[in-house]
Image 1 (cartoon, rainbow, N blue to C red):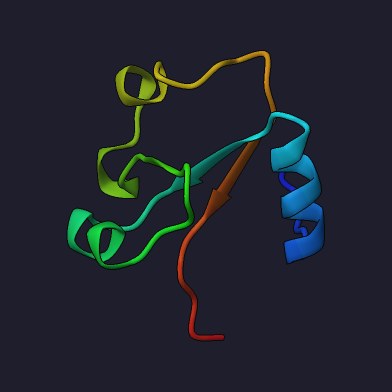
Image 2 (image 1 turned 135 degrees about the vertical axis):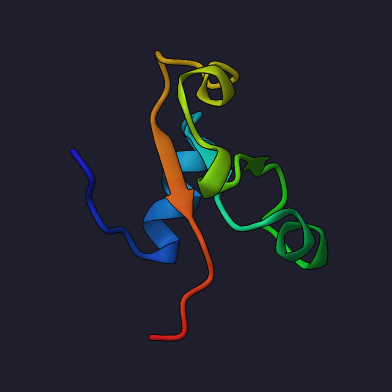
Length: 67
């Protein structure tokens, strides 16, 4: 179930083993992303591309937002 978290919770979750997933296009990922993030562009996200994730660990999906 998706849940919003603040940056402190992200830091805690990553320290506990969560996976970071950046879903923006390649050029935006190359420009700036969080250290250790896995790049899975949203437009290419599917069963095959998501197979790189460890199903036993939490996943934090993020992207840049202007709001």
